[in-house]
Length: 315
Image 1 (cartoon, rainbow, N blue to C red):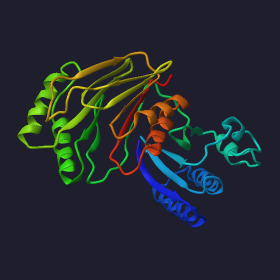
Image 2: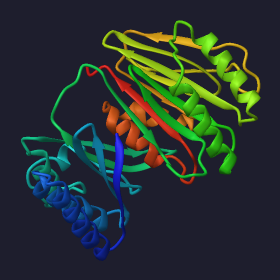
Image 3: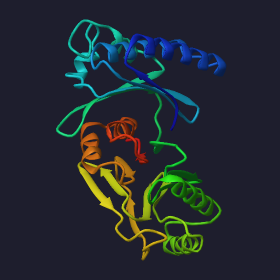
Image 4: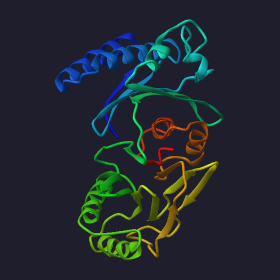
């Protein structure tokens, strides 16, 4: 999933700008469902201005599909079922916005609303109605030249990395490490050998150390192997947390940790930029991989290079 547009909404002029900008973008792309998305943007933006007073609207792309997300750090929606009924709204007043959005034949409305000790706010996501057996979502929180986080896709593998520190050296180290990964063959079966080669490469080239996770995805399950402080949240009947504890590649690598998950509902692998209690609360509150990842990014502390990977078996 890729973040295409990001609009901060805090006044009427912000919403008007977002509508015109999105309209021009869809016209350029010849997007057939632009009228519904523009209607949704106005409804969701109006809700943001009416209740929490400020928030964000994101346009995302997954494969060839567009998705629209509205995010705010307000008090949360009191009763989601009530808010989706005809003639009601998120604050139990008269309104048609969310009900109308939920009645579209092609798009599904999903809502995450949290109000806890650690986090509060809402995420509303509009995405195509389609089912997959196994889906995965990757998202870089910040894609800026001073960040050390990265996500790569190589065949059936997803690679999540977090280079030590910030600044230009972290960025350049991440580039060279990404190139090394993409130009070498690896598997979870022989992961120690691959990490040893990468460890030597990082030391020889005087690069920053990196924590690294590799996910091998198949229709039968997910293998995860890695080194460092990245955490794995596994949602089955409850939430189990695993983490890699064996050093940092380029600094203190000893051996890889390995996990295999055959029966799972959702798995999230995060860098250490996302706090454990935040992810735990989001996973506890929602069954949607998309809302969990978007919510995890949105409710985390800002201005840090943090990355999430989400994997769902589609059950």
